[in-house]
Image (cartoon, rainbow, N blue to C red; front, top):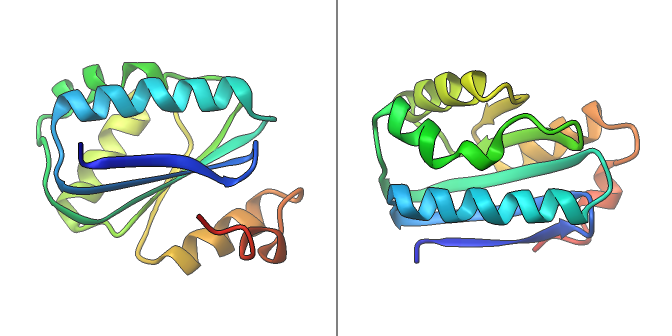
Length: 134
């Protein structure tokens, strides 16, 4: 499987890493896992999704949306930040996450993602985020 998931900040920030060739089935499995993390966490539960090592992924927005259906809007969910996005993937993420009604950003680096979370969630700060890195 080309996917890892765990807590970056216990109960608050999920860290996912995708690598290699990612399939629709893996996206669906990851979506179900995230739903469980959000249910177990303390709102708002944010997500950091690192795709810097992905070299192939599905390209149909409709198929990706179906695979990620478990990521539908949930009031306990915070920001989803996708890290390491090329222009095509940035576009796909924008379409899919908007269709799912999710708050998201695409950023180039992990440091930018942590800074963004610290700025947009007053209960987190960069000192809280950095020492517990996965």
